[in-house]
Amino acid sequence: MKLDHDELDRLIEKISTSDIQEFSLEGEDFKLEIKRNVFDQNQVINNLVSNTSLLDKQTITNQKTINDNVPLVNEPEVPQVAPPGRPDLTEITSPMVGTFYRAAAPGEEPFVEVGNNVKVGQTICILEAMKLMNEIESEFNAEIVEILVENGTPVEFGQVLMRVKQS
Image (cartoon, rainbow, N blue to C red):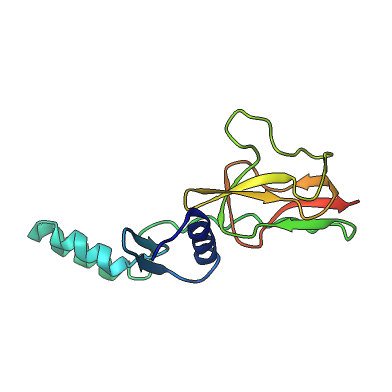
């Protein structure tokens, strides 16, 4: 099986927008494994216990019993929800989970600013997902009214990125 760059990009995008937690694909000259959001608290505890002295094992085991309902790591922050918009504005939402970037590279001019007019097909931002940079293009002619996400911020699927007034 051969997989070109475009096919790989589409496959990764489909996986990143799905509920799939683990994925494996093997071809003649490649092997692709994707694992995300896979965290087993008991496995971490067992690894800690097996790699510690007997005195520490008892402490960790007791701590585990006390903290069974307390997560070992802080949960990631919930993405900021956009404030309600005006009915005359159209919301541009994230088509995937990723990191939002306003410019092609650090120090470069942003693709758009509030007040800019954009045309169909014009790049308005980049979403990085699994080390792939995905240019997000405008689907209509519009004026940028609000940019709701800070540069370098993680975004969720369906999260409002910008609000525009269609022309």
